[in-house]
Image (cartoon, rainbow, N blue to C red; front, side, top):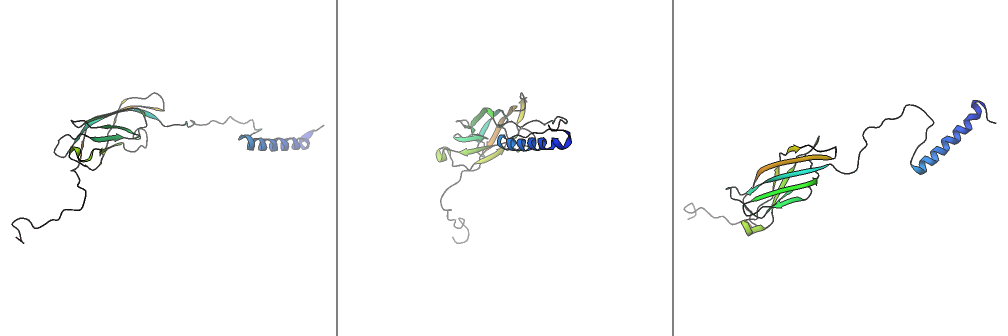
Length: 177
């Protein structure tokens, strides 16, 4: 019979050793301390918060003429191509919105000429910063709600020419003529 404090030490030692071995195998720990219960903060969940995005506008050249055949892309693959009037519209549900939330970075769309010289291009790509407005709150911490911006005109720079630069001679009527 084990009695007294000295007799209790081997039982505690066996208990601690057993808990250590089982904890290492099972990934858990044991304690014989009946202290205050431990309160944990919010536990992180897997995944990424998502919401709805509604963005539309037109693609124009510097003179204000609509340009068809320009792909306008937002974030994770949501994109549309401008039509004959230069109009485009992106509507995406369940998409990550990097500019929603605290400490977020700016959201952008990138306009890229995908048809080359067909409509007066090729135009260099243009990145435009969005100023999205939250039009509908989300439900819970994973639903960021609906974010919108309408009437966004994207001005494409002049078309670029590929190949060697053109040789420039003296101006007509200038020196050398």
